[in-house]
Structures are given as C-alpha cells and as structure tokens.
Length: 87
Image (cartoon, rainbow, N blue to C red; front, side, top):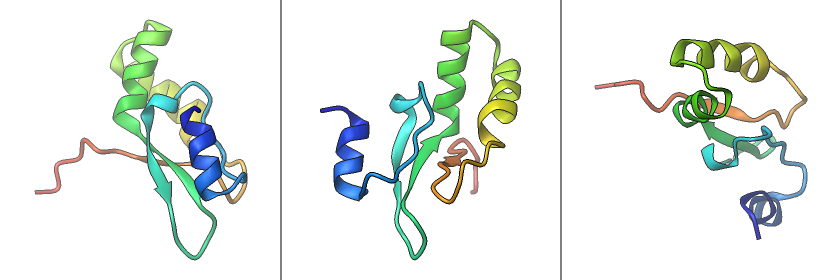
C-alpha cells in the first residue's frame, strides 16, 4: 500500500495530493478545518531539480507558479519550508 492510500485510510478520502511529490510528504494537518496533506518544500525543490533537469532557482520559480499558488479547494495541500533557520 502506498503513502496516498495509507493517508487516505487514516484521514479520509478527501485529501488532495500534489502529483509527483509523494516522497516529499511529511504529514497531514489536523485541526478544526479539513485535514490537508503537508509537503516539505525543500524536498520538492530537489525532486524538480532531478526530474526536470533544472537548477534550484528555476525549481523554485516552477513550483511557485505551478504548485504553491494553485488553490484547489478547502483541502489544498500545505507547503512547508523546513530550511528556515528560526534560531
């Protein structure tokens, strides 16, 4: 059973996924609103660099235009930048 199936079984079938980025899933948000799949942006950039044969800057631009700004309803995935140094 793949990650999508496991998450859907545990959190409901209304989850939405970003195609091609299953390896970048870090969890599912839980709260008063709908459950949403959570992705690690840094991992997504790495996938783009490898799969699209582009550099990091181009990967960020591609993701911002094609993925991060796409609203697909209340179950739109959440994208987290884990590389931010908060301390």
